[in-house]
Image (cartoon, rainbow, N blue to C red; front, side):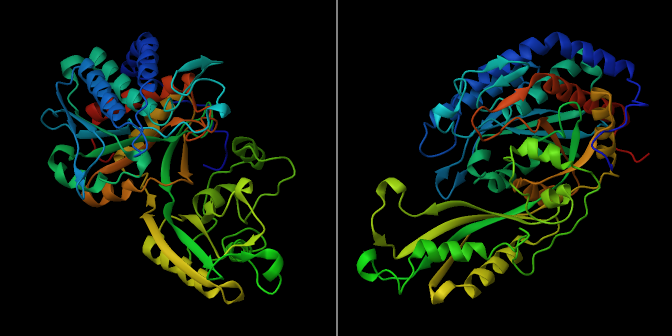
Length: 474
C-alpha cells in the first residue's frame, strides 16, 4: 500500500455466505453491544492494588458468554508465578471436524485502572453510548475483542450450523494489562489444549474509521531504570548550591543525550530504517495523536517508518519530589524509568545492553549512574503471503468494502514472541477492534460501534473462509 486512501473502485464481491453472516450479525448486534456493556461494568483489574475478586467475576461472565454460543467445553484456568496465582483465563474448545484447521482466538478480559475520574466525561465502568461510540474502560481494550469472537461464533453457528467444521479454541487472558506475568507458563502448562493452525489476536487497531488494517509488524520493547547520584545525602541549596549540581538536573542532562538534535534516538547500535510502504499523512498523525499546534515532530524519515520501523524512547516516570513537597534542597539522587520501542528484527537483549552502555558512558559531571534493566519483549513481523493472512485481508475487504491496509504498529505485544516460539507452525494474525480515537489506557476510552460491527463480520467471514478453503496455498 502506498496511500492512506485504499481503492474502492473494485471492492470484493460479497459471497452468499458473507451476506448471510452480515444479516445475522446485524440482527444480533444490539444484544452484542448489551453484552459488551455488561462486561464493561465489571472492574476486572489485574493489579495488586485492586480487588482480585472482580477478575474472577469477569472470567465467569466471559465463560457464560462462551457457553451461550454453543461451546460446552469451557474452563477457567490459572497457573502460579513463584507461588503467586496468575490471573484467571478462560479456555474453551470446539474440536475440528476431520480435515479442518483449528483456530485459536485470543483476547483479554482484564482492563487498565481508570485513572483520575475527573478526566472522564462519563463513569468509567458504566458503558455509555454517544454519537455512535461506546465509552467506558475496556469498551475497546479489550472486551470488544472478546465480543468480536463471541459475535462471530454466534453468527457462524446460526448460518452454518453443524456444517461449520473449523476447530475453535478461545483463550481469554486475565492479566494482559499487568504484563502477562504467567503467560509463558500458562502456554507451557496447557500447550496441548491451545495448539492451533491459526492464531487470531484481537488486540490491535484499524487504520482509521472506514479503513481496516491487518497488523503485520510490532515493535519490541525494553524498559528499565536510570538512577543518578551526586551526593551522599541532601544538603541546603543556599549553603552548598553552585559548585555541585543536584541529581535531578544531572538526570535531565543525561536524559537529553538519548536523542539527537532531530529527535531520533541517539543510542548507538539500535536497528531501524525508513521501510514503511504506507503513507501516514502528517496532518492525520497530528490529529490522531492530539499534537498541539506549533509542536514540531521529532525524528527523520516518513511518519509511518518513525512509528513502525525505528526505535522510540520515552521517559515514563521519574522519582523526584513533587512541587507540593519541594524544598530548597540539593537532592542527592534521582531516577527515571525509560521505555524503548524496538524496530522489527531488533534483539531485545542487545538493545538493553546498548542502553546500558550509553547511559554509563554519558554520566554527567562524573555522577554515579546506576542502570537497572527491566522487562523485554521481542518485535514481530508476519508474512502476508501465508494463506491465513491472505484470507484475513480478503475478509476485511468484504466487511468494509475497501482494501485494507497492511500496517505496522508502534506498540508492542510482548507475548506474541511466546506464541511464535511455542507454536512455530501456527500462522498468527493480529486484528483490530480499535481506531485512532479509541484512547485505550486513557480517560474516555471508547469504541466506534460501526467499525466494531464490521470487525465482528470480518472475523466471521475469515472463519467461514477457513472452513471452506482451509490453509492450502492457492
